[in-house]
View 1 (cartoon, rainbow, N blue to C red):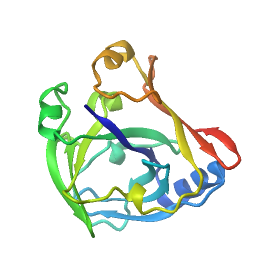
View 2 (cartoon, rainbow, N blue to C red):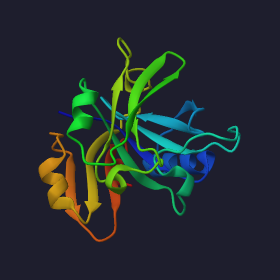
View 3 (cartoon, rainbow, N blue to C red):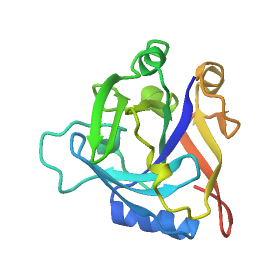
Amino acid sequence: MLTLDHIAIAATDLEQGTREISEKLGVPLEPGGRHDRYGTHNNLLNLGELYLEVITPDPDASAGHLNWFGLHTFNGATRPASWICKTDDLEGALAHAPAGAGEIQDLARGDLTWQITVPQDGSLPLQGGWPTMMRWGKGVTSPAGSLPDRGCRLLKWEVRHPRADWLQNNVPVQDERVSFRQSDVIGFAATISTPNGPVTL
């Protein structure tokens, strides 16, 4: 079984993307960090038991890094781009995932350690229809547990996909906030409650 861990908002520039999301939600985001292996960096927002990250390629990253989340081909407006689910049995979840779900990678940043599934070409499984899967290291607390609470909570995460019915029946996540909608254009929508009312990204 998978549990929603965090949602990712992609942008082409971290400062600009963070500013846009902060203005829309009416709350500040917190500094995140760098992912040296993949040449990305992020900022974070507490959503209760999960969190939101704004993530972009890092212009200061060294050459030769790998790709993930499809970020190095990402363009256009800042928008929800992927969802990440955690599990205690990452090997089992990967064995039952569709082809192309990725390989397990070990990552660390400061006190955080985790394993995550990343396809070799750095793309998203089923273009994001299937969630990226992860497992936090033993004894590691998700960033959601240390971020300031700004009064925001995820109300709904909608996956728009040509194979919505198949995903609905096969993605092993039981969360009433997650829904799948038939669409020829793949995309996502996150509805978040804020101190100023609900906002859909």
